[in-house]
Length: 181
Ligand SMILES: [Zn+2]
Image (cartoon, rainbow, N blue to C red; front, side, top):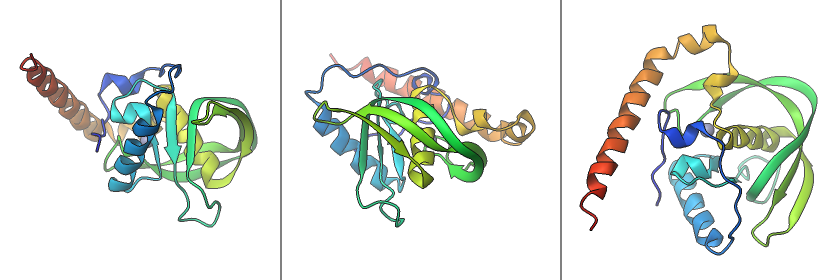
C-alpha cells in the first residue's frame, strides 16, 4: 500500500512528468488501485501517492455508467464540450473538504494504456468529471483552486492545518532517510 499525500506536499503543486519507461508500470498501477480502494476513492493520480508521473486511474463501476476500471497514461485533454455543470467533489488529498465544482460535461482525451497504445476518446458523465479532477492533480490544481475566493476563504483554516501536517510528514520522512545507509 502507498501513502496518500495531502495538500501542502509540493508534489501536488506541479505538472507531472511524461512517462517514458513502461517497465514498472503494471506494479505501480496495481499498487495505486489497492491504495485507492483502501481509501474508498473512485479516482487517484500518481502524484497523490508521491509519484511524479502522468498516470491516473478511475473506477466508477459502482455507477451504471461503465463496467470497467480505467487506466490513463500520458493524458492530455484535447478539447472540452457541452454545458458546464456543478457537482460536489471530494478529494483524497483534501480530507474533510467537499466543494461544488463547475466543469464542462464532455472532454476529448488523448492517452496511452499499459500496452503503450495511444487512444483518443470522448468521455461524459461521472467518468468525464473524474478524469478532469485527476488531470487537475497532474497539473498541480486542487478543487479549492476551482472555486471562488469567497468559497475558498471558508476553508482557510482547514487548508492551513493540512499544510502544516504535510510539512511535518515531509520533515519526518527526511529524518528517517538519514538512517538509510
Ligand atoms: Zn483529488
